[in-house]
Image (cartoon, rainbow, N blue to C red; front, side, top):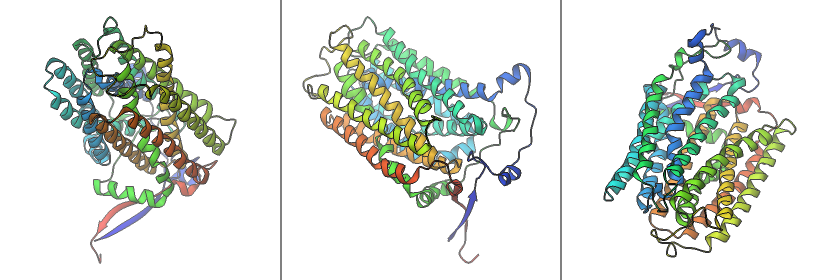
Length: 482
């Protein structure tokens, strides 16, 4: 068997374009619907609806995870479940594009969202029957598959609906609404447990989250089919065709061969969700009672919105500096934040261990004198996380404007991110010392930033060159001799 390679140059993929590209890829202009139908089928409306879908499902998952141990007194089942979740997510994220091609984004979102309802229902079940811990682990593994479908479908819609000039705006709309899910979910948990000084949430909190995720399962029904969408410039959205699973798998190796500098971002990818486990279980879950954890979770997700907007709009998209300068400024800010926040956290972490704070211990409440300093650490961790994720996405975008290449890069990102999460959640389930989890998170964060520096220096340019818009893809397999 011999593999046939084809070289495609996507000059019009947001690179500034060329006249040849514009003429060869010119789309027929259609008149957009008017009245109520025009509002309903408007790309902004549909992307906002997509944001609310993720608000209800991944947003509630973030709020639940942020409570530490999923809001449970015994966090072991939660940690095992997250290990299973991210292991399946890491694997299936590589191949979910082919499934989206068969199912379509709307069906994929319906299938993807119900996994979040199953996951939260499993926590309700264990609150009722403590012996149902295996259900949580199985639900986590199923959610990993569903999450791969949901986030791939989300990427398809985000790529297809806006015009080239609107992509930043539409991504901002989506992420603002999505992150508000964590904020609202945290507020629900805080309000429901305001008068509780226990270490775990009641059934009412899980039921509230479950109802919201079930609403999220229904919302994809109201999405307009992509092939019926007309953009604001009058061009019709074409169905996004994904390659076969063999082509998609082989293209991963081709992307590395054509743009090997992406490998230097892999440590940042791996670390990007790794630090969540210590933040949520080793700090928030270990030190605070449930209502303080709910408040910590609330301010954490609020700070995410501000952190992402600040570094993305005021630094990485600033008109005052060249792109290379912005890359170094952004990297420097994240590097300083990573060191400052972890040094701050170290002085707290060295005062306690797993043994010194058993699950049934009386924990810190928001009325305690020491609480204000501790909650500020959660705020700064939220800022660091949002700036980290925003910078990673921006660096990938600075390497190319070709959607095919960026899709491969995003696949690397989600897979390695999930692999890192699976490792550390399993370590937490095995009761690894909090200090070990903290130090490994710190080392990976710093190591990831140091590894990315040569990539920024050698690869990020002031303008994307034409060769950066080229991706070799596998387009067919022939028998030898044909």
